[in-house]
Length: 263
Image 1 (spheres, rainbow, N blue to C red):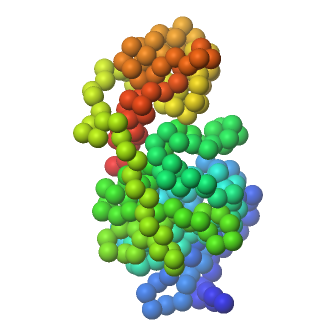
Image 2: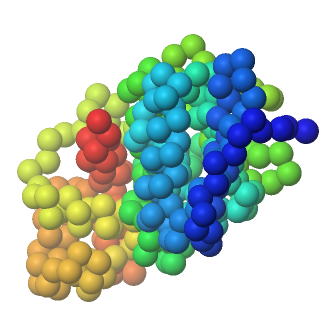
Image 3: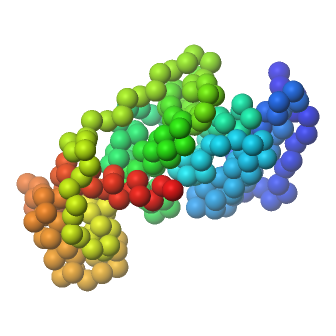
């Protein structure tokens, strides 16, 4: 049974909570209870607390990776969240007791999202969270592994440097997905708004102009023109339903766009 040397608890209890357990070298674990009122504030507060401890230890786990994994906890409804900071801040392990991830390899692909309509109101929802976390970890010379939690749920581990990558059972890292354009996507002459339209197509699966207009707060006619431009570039294609869906090239372009968000 673990005994913490000291526990720091926030006085304001809220609906969403997480336990952050830091393991200083040669000392007893430190436990911090963090609470937030909603998913957006939870992402900010949890990430800030974790990265603060990581940097205090001298660790190099990238903030972007932590933020994306923390945001992804919305899919687990924040059940039983425990964030462990290990190996001098070079390993951050985020575990939950949610429903778990059935297809872990697909979960780190850009464009794959299991976000519910309610979740999409709270998070970006472009199917890029774990993909962005993996990209940020790799840019820092590390890895992201996703595995089942014992007794249900998921464990996502961000490791940098020579730190161990997985949990006690050493689950292997999932291989990166095969891209249609491995040497880089062709340069596309599309505007920033059209990039947002493309991302909206990816996150929604199938869209018509009215859906795009509503999501991006633009006119239906503008949404129609932008979808037509994207179709001309081969980034979206017509579905039998009459709506637009993203093409393989479109997914690669979105991955390039989203990867650019990672510092």
